[in-house]
Image (tube, rainbow, N blue to C red; front, side, top):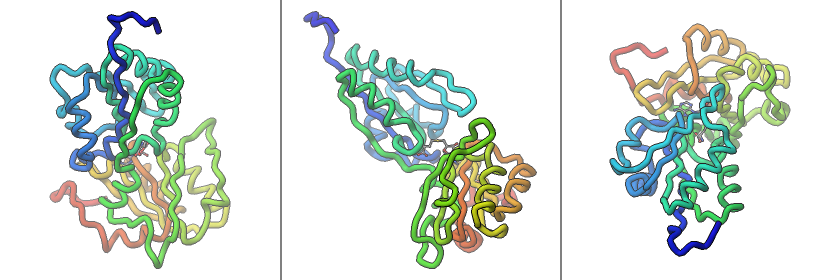
Length: 261
Ligand code: SAH
């Protein structure tokens, strides 16, 4: 960059997690930074109402991000953040959940580092934590699971490239993000690698919001149940015997008058 005396100071880019959907789950730090930002670059999956916390004059740029429909290619997005910061703007890069859990936060920061742009990262409640809490499925439990794994269930060419033997384990809870399209393949692989057909599994759609739906079943029956119910993204798949606790521990009633699936 040229060193013109008129060039503005470089702004800071804040990579901010906005939580899983319920606006109340936004951190105080995220709310404050959103309220102060000159520009906000936001994704598809951010909590309803979060942009209303922004200054009316803040520039708001939609970056898209649905797995099948990337509105702005990642490289372009990385350059946009650099460009905005170089005009002296403080930028909030707003993401669903936590920026470092399947959020590409790392990739965006690499470009900022390479370009000498100051940045900060603000963690958010990741979908696994939010959905588990609002569905009544503890991710760990002394009688059920001593470890949790977060995995991507994103299908590529009809397959999911994961270390299946390490995921098909007893006393482990596995949470699949982006797994609705690949659900049948996920269940098939877990069974093929040793989990029983009746191993408990659940799907949580639109977790933490008023549109939340929870379906519980087992590896053999979950895909058909999810297809019949018309469950779509965003949804999280939780696999493990902790799912058995859901019936007893569910507390969140998003639609009190409707029957739960
Ligand atoms: N960084 C995010 C994840 C982005 S990947 C986080 O930490 O949560 C997007 C995937 O997250 C979706 O495909 C879905 O699997 C999951 N997800 C995000 N919000 C969700 C919600 N409210 N309910 C269920 N799943 C959700």
